[in-house]
Image (cartoon, rainbow, N blue to C red; front, side, top):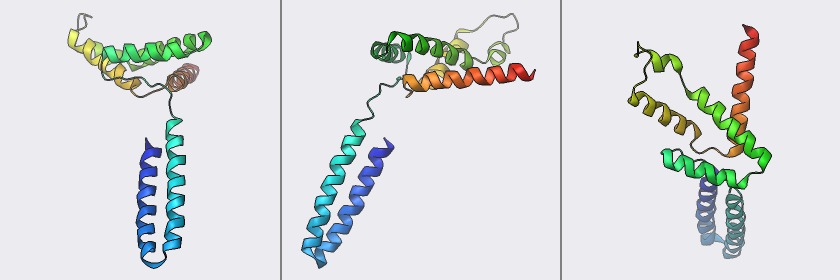
Length: 150
């Protein structure tokens, strides 16, 4: 998305400069317009390269559907890593102290569960399979470091 916005900005700047040059030298402006066309084609090609599927964390159904679509594109080995990583990220998103602080008898309210789910969905929103796997690796390494320090 950032590449797309930068491309649009660059195209507008070059277009503005070429219209200014058109007032002074038509041959130079024509050359700049050809370069502008080349930049546009190249940038739109690059924007199309970012076609990795991402998790849609807007709601439960969107998360489930997008995770299934991602899983369908992965190899068996990577599916296992992805599933394990989803579990790690999910468990990391749960704050057990916060969950039980208002519940003296150890019961969890439905509203608290909904908040937990939304927090988990938001933590996954917009991430690719590789990003989820790397985040799980980071979480595991941080957990291992804190366990060693104790």
